[in-house]
Length: 232
Ligand code: MN
Image (cartoon, rainbow, N blue to C red; front, top):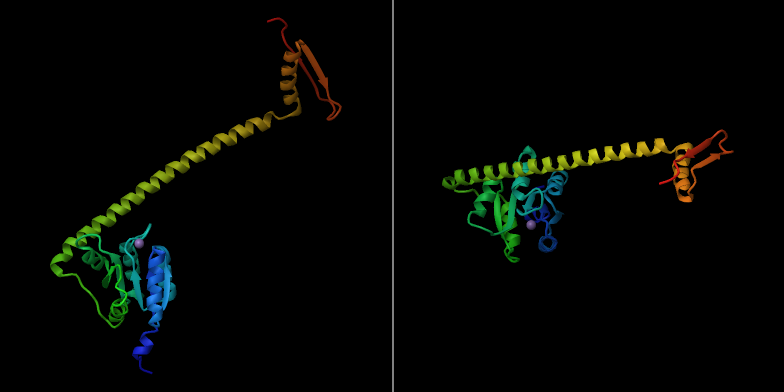
Protein backbone atom coordinates (compact mmCIF):
# COMPACT_ATOMS: atom_id res chain seq x y z
CA UNK A 1 0.00 0.00 0.00
CA UNK A 2 1.49 3.37 -0.96
CA UNK A 3 2.19 5.83 1.83
CA UNK A 4 -0.45 8.47 1.65
CA UNK A 5 -0.19 11.90 3.16
CA UNK A 6 -2.49 10.73 5.92
CA UNK A 7 -0.17 7.87 6.90
CA UNK A 8 2.84 10.13 6.83
CA UNK A 9 1.07 12.35 9.33
CA UNK A 10 1.04 9.51 11.82
CA UNK A 11 4.82 9.63 11.94
CA UNK A 12 6.52 9.39 15.32
CA UNK A 13 8.39 12.51 16.37
CA UNK A 14 10.90 12.72 19.22
CA UNK A 15 11.24 16.08 20.97
CA UNK A 16 14.30 16.55 23.18
CA UNK A 17 13.67 19.60 25.37
CA UNK A 18 14.31 20.44 29.03
CA UNK A 19 11.56 23.05 29.31
CA UNK A 20 8.25 21.50 30.36
CA UNK A 21 6.04 24.23 28.88
CA UNK A 22 7.74 23.89 25.51
CA UNK A 23 7.29 20.11 25.61
CA UNK A 24 3.58 20.50 26.37
CA UNK A 25 3.08 23.11 23.66
CA UNK A 26 4.82 21.14 20.90
CA UNK A 27 3.05 17.95 21.96
CA UNK A 28 -0.34 19.68 21.84
CA UNK A 29 0.29 21.20 18.41
CA UNK A 30 1.67 18.07 16.79
CA UNK A 31 -0.74 15.59 18.39
CA UNK A 32 -3.60 17.73 17.04
CA UNK A 33 -2.04 17.11 13.60
CA UNK A 34 -2.07 13.36 14.16
CA UNK A 35 1.59 12.79 14.98
CA UNK A 36 2.77 10.54 17.78
CA UNK A 37 5.03 12.49 20.13
CA UNK A 38 7.73 11.03 22.32
CA UNK A 39 9.65 13.48 24.46
CA UNK A 40 12.83 13.48 26.51
CA UNK A 41 13.96 16.12 28.98
CA UNK A 42 17.72 15.81 28.65
CA UNK A 43 20.34 14.81 26.12
CA UNK A 44 21.08 11.29 27.38
CA UNK A 45 17.40 10.41 27.71
CA UNK A 46 16.96 11.84 24.21
CA UNK A 47 19.68 9.64 22.71
CA UNK A 48 18.19 6.60 24.47
CA UNK A 49 14.70 7.47 23.22
CA UNK A 50 15.99 7.91 19.66
CA UNK A 51 17.54 4.42 19.70
CA UNK A 52 14.48 2.86 21.35
CA UNK A 53 11.71 4.63 19.43
CA UNK A 54 13.27 5.07 15.98
CA UNK A 55 11.36 8.30 15.32
CA UNK A 56 10.79 9.63 11.79
CA UNK A 57 12.04 13.06 12.89
CA UNK A 58 13.83 14.50 15.92
CA UNK A 59 13.24 18.01 17.25
CA UNK A 60 16.21 19.08 19.34
CA UNK A 61 16.55 21.91 21.83
CA UNK A 62 20.16 23.15 21.83
CA UNK A 63 20.43 24.47 25.38
CA UNK A 64 20.14 21.33 27.44
CA UNK A 65 21.72 20.58 30.82
CA UNK A 66 24.86 18.37 30.92
CA UNK A 67 24.97 17.12 27.33
CA UNK A 68 23.85 19.93 25.02
CA UNK A 69 22.21 19.78 21.62
CA UNK A 70 25.50 20.00 19.70
CA UNK A 71 26.73 16.89 21.49
CA UNK A 72 23.38 15.09 21.17
CA UNK A 73 23.26 15.53 17.39
CA UNK A 74 26.90 14.43 17.08
CA UNK A 75 26.11 11.20 18.94
CA UNK A 76 22.83 10.54 17.13
CA UNK A 77 24.37 11.13 13.71
CA UNK A 78 27.21 8.77 14.53
CA UNK A 79 24.72 5.88 14.27
CA UNK A 80 24.27 4.74 10.64
CA UNK A 81 20.59 4.04 11.44
CA UNK A 82 20.00 7.78 11.87
CA UNK A 83 21.89 8.93 8.78
CA UNK A 84 18.68 9.90 7.03
CA UNK A 85 16.58 10.82 10.07
CA UNK A 86 16.10 14.60 10.07
CA UNK A 87 17.31 16.22 13.30
CA UNK A 88 15.89 19.73 13.55
CA UNK A 89 17.30 22.25 16.02
CA UNK A 90 14.55 24.16 17.81
CA UNK A 91 16.21 26.97 19.68
CA UNK A 92 15.91 30.57 20.71
CA UNK A 93 18.04 32.85 18.61
CA UNK A 94 20.83 33.87 20.96
CA UNK A 95 23.55 35.17 18.67
CA UNK A 96 24.67 35.68 15.09
CA UNK A 97 25.38 32.36 13.43
CA UNK A 98 23.22 30.13 15.63
CA UNK A 99 21.58 28.57 12.56
CA UNK A 100 24.97 27.83 10.93
CA UNK A 101 26.28 26.43 14.21
CA UNK A 102 23.49 23.87 14.55
CA UNK A 103 23.76 22.86 10.86
CA UNK A 104 27.53 22.44 11.05
CA UNK A 105 27.07 20.32 14.18
CA UNK A 106 24.96 17.90 12.16
CA UNK A 107 21.38 19.21 12.32
CA UNK A 108 19.31 19.06 9.13
CA UNK A 109 17.30 22.17 9.84
CA UNK A 110 16.67 25.00 12.23
CA UNK A 111 13.39 26.30 13.67
CA UNK A 112 13.60 29.41 15.78
CA UNK A 113 11.96 29.71 19.19
CA UNK A 114 9.48 30.92 20.20
CA UNK A 115 7.79 28.66 17.70
CA UNK A 116 5.13 30.07 15.41
CA UNK A 117 2.13 27.95 16.37
CA UNK A 118 0.47 28.37 12.95
CA UNK A 119 3.59 27.72 10.85
CA UNK A 120 5.08 24.96 13.00
CA UNK A 121 3.12 21.94 11.64
CA UNK A 122 3.99 22.95 8.06
CA UNK A 123 7.69 23.43 8.96
CA UNK A 124 7.79 19.95 10.52
CA UNK A 125 5.98 18.41 7.56
CA UNK A 126 8.46 19.91 5.10
CA UNK A 127 11.36 18.27 6.91
CA UNK A 128 9.45 14.97 7.03
CA UNK A 129 9.03 15.23 3.27
CA UNK A 130 12.69 15.67 2.61
CA UNK A 131 13.57 19.33 3.10
CA UNK A 132 17.16 19.72 4.36
CA UNK A 133 19.05 22.88 5.19
CA UNK A 134 22.77 23.22 4.55
CA UNK A 135 25.21 25.80 5.74
CA UNK A 136 26.69 27.97 2.98
CA UNK A 137 30.07 26.47 2.08
CA UNK A 138 32.07 29.69 2.58
CA UNK A 139 30.81 29.78 6.21
CA UNK A 140 31.38 26.14 6.92
CA UNK A 141 35.10 26.20 7.79
CA UNK A 142 34.76 29.00 10.31
CA UNK A 143 31.85 27.36 12.12
CA UNK A 144 33.43 23.92 12.04
CA UNK A 145 36.56 25.28 13.67
CA UNK A 146 34.48 27.04 16.29
CA UNK A 147 32.51 23.85 16.98
CA UNK A 148 35.72 21.85 17.38
CA UNK A 149 37.11 24.39 19.83
CA UNK A 150 33.87 24.32 21.76
CA UNK A 151 33.90 20.54 22.05
CA UNK A 152 37.55 20.54 23.13
CA UNK A 153 36.86 23.14 25.84
CA UNK A 154 33.83 21.21 27.06
CA UNK A 155 35.98 18.08 27.21
CA UNK A 156 38.69 19.93 29.18
CA UNK A 157 36.09 21.16 31.65
CA UNK A 158 34.81 17.66 32.13
CA UNK A 159 38.33 16.34 32.70
CA UNK A 160 38.86 19.08 35.31
CA UNK A 161 35.56 18.19 36.96
CA UNK A 162 36.55 14.51 37.11
CA UNK A 163 39.89 15.46 38.64
CA UNK A 164 38.09 17.49 41.32
CA UNK A 165 35.73 14.61 42.03
CA UNK A 166 38.65 12.21 42.24
CA UNK A 167 40.47 14.44 44.75
CA UNK A 168 37.28 14.61 46.79
CA UNK A 169 37.01 10.81 46.87
CA UNK A 170 40.69 10.39 47.74
CA UNK A 171 40.18 12.80 50.66
CA UNK A 172 37.04 10.97 51.79
CA UNK A 173 38.82 7.64 51.56
CA UNK A 174 41.66 8.82 53.83
CA UNK A 175 39.11 10.21 56.31
CA UNK A 176 37.36 6.86 56.35
CA UNK A 177 40.69 5.15 56.90
CA UNK A 178 41.41 7.40 59.91
CA UNK A 179 37.97 6.68 61.28
CA UNK A 180 38.47 2.97 60.80
CA UNK A 181 41.80 3.11 62.63
CA UNK A 182 40.28 5.10 65.51
CA UNK A 183 37.40 2.64 65.82
CA UNK A 184 39.86 -0.22 65.87
CA UNK A 185 41.85 1.47 68.65
CA UNK A 186 38.75 2.03 70.76
CA UNK A 187 37.43 -1.50 70.23
CA UNK A 188 40.75 -3.04 71.24
CA UNK A 189 40.61 -1.04 74.48
CA UNK A 190 37.12 -2.10 75.28
CA UNK A 191 38.04 -5.08 77.37
CA UNK A 192 36.32 -5.16 80.75
CA UNK A 193 39.62 -4.82 82.53
CA UNK A 194 40.68 -1.87 80.39
CA UNK A 195 37.44 -0.04 81.05
CA UNK A 196 37.58 -0.78 84.77
CA UNK A 197 41.09 0.49 85.01
CA UNK A 198 40.09 3.80 83.46
CA UNK A 199 36.96 4.05 85.56
CA UNK A 200 38.70 3.17 88.82
CA UNK A 201 41.45 5.67 88.18
CA UNK A 202 38.89 8.42 87.79
CA UNK A 203 36.89 7.19 90.77
CA UNK A 204 39.94 6.98 93.04
CA UNK A 205 40.85 10.55 92.12
CA UNK A 206 37.29 11.71 92.76
CA UNK A 207 36.99 10.20 96.23
CA UNK A 208 40.55 10.96 97.19
CA UNK A 209 41.51 7.35 97.59
CA UNK A 210 45.00 6.14 96.83
CA UNK A 211 44.04 2.62 96.08
CA UNK A 212 41.00 0.85 94.74
CA UNK A 213 40.55 -2.76 93.89
CA UNK A 214 37.69 -4.57 92.24
CA UNK A 215 37.13 -8.20 91.66
CA UNK A 216 34.35 -9.29 89.35
CA UNK A 217 32.29 -12.38 89.90
CA UNK A 218 31.13 -12.30 86.28
CA UNK A 219 33.21 -12.91 84.22
CA UNK A 220 35.24 -14.67 86.90
CA UNK A 221 38.88 -14.01 87.44
CA UNK A 222 38.85 -10.34 86.53
CA UNK A 223 40.59 -8.35 89.18
CA UNK A 224 41.56 -4.76 88.69
CA UNK A 225 43.46 -2.56 91.11
CA UNK A 226 44.56 1.02 90.80
CA UNK A 227 47.11 2.78 92.94
CA UNK A 228 47.89 6.43 92.77
CA UNK A 229 50.29 8.63 94.61
CA UNK A 230 48.70 10.56 97.45
CA UNK A 231 49.31 14.21 97.86
CA UNK A 232 49.27 16.88 95.20
MN1 MN B 1 16.54 24.35 26.92
